[in-house]
Image (cartoon, rainbow, N blue to C red; front, top):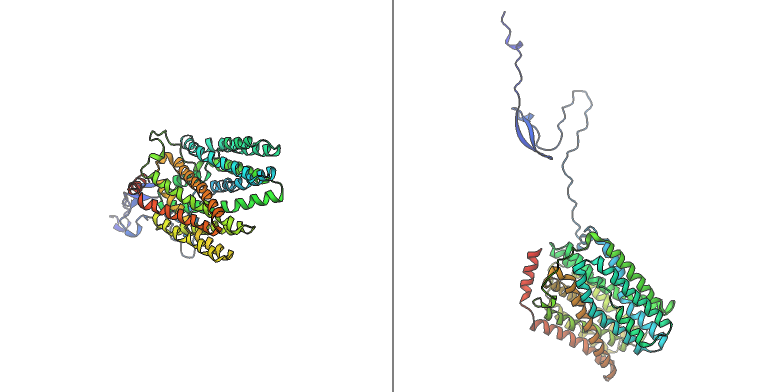
Length: 467
């Protein structure tokens, strides 16, 4: 009897194979003739259908990679989401606060012990002048050997100089000893410049984030120079005259140690360059001249305001200028499209007329409001100027270039202080002293307009190519 066709067993057709993509890469997977039985292209595991009446088994979760977290809308939150940014920022802020404490602490300590503000001012000026000369040299060493290797011993030497000065004042040492101590101990590194160099290294591919970082750094500068003198004056009056200098030394050393310990965010050591000083970079001398005139605005405004108010209210009134700059800097960091340096200087020249007009009214309250508004031009100007310095300075000399800008700024502050003080003392009324910051701001604008280098476009193109 021949076999029935329905009882004949035929081998099942072997499935053909083809390459398919899996989370681990291309692999062989079966391809059946039935479309419904095709192997899924997703990474989800296929489980057999449950039998009728049976309990369904839970399906395995798909093995898709985790979705990236959405970036915060606030640019400052995005800034500090960078790994290691918070740690080095905390250390740098602790180290930067004493920069506003040392001047007041030294003057109060020496004036109280020697009963001479002239000697106190001379010692403070000698230390500032020596620091202006040594700062670019220290910054060059930082570029060549790294921030941690240079900043820590330089800070330790500067703190030792402060301690020796306190000891000299305690034993009533001669004036030449105080001057020598101030000069020999002027090795403090530019902590603000080192922080900006870290941001430039971490954010070299994101110009908008670099702009936000520069705005934050400028706001931090204003905050430290606003709180530092107040803290030093409080410690010197509440405890003893040397308390401001001692507390500043302790904070400075602690902050630099915390900052230098963050090695993951430290810029790599640049190879030795043969280009010489960043002063040779195209457009840099003209830009430093603008910084010099801008510093004269700040120095003149400080001395003239102290002479005009002449009382305990002078400090809080003057602090409003720094408060306005701090607020404007934080707001400026949110703006993606920035103004040019000439536009910022023009706004500064216009706003610096407000304190002069307010002083003519004789109202301290009006002067306080005018200083708050005038200070709002400071941070945008400094942020834009520092951004230009970063563009025009070779990457291997970034610390040195920014330190040269700070040195020019400090030199301008010294010139502005001398000019404003002379006007406040020799003019018929201290009100005429407010002509000095207006003149200095106008000079800075004129220098920028007349010496604006053609190298700005080349510097921007070079920065874009490097990023």
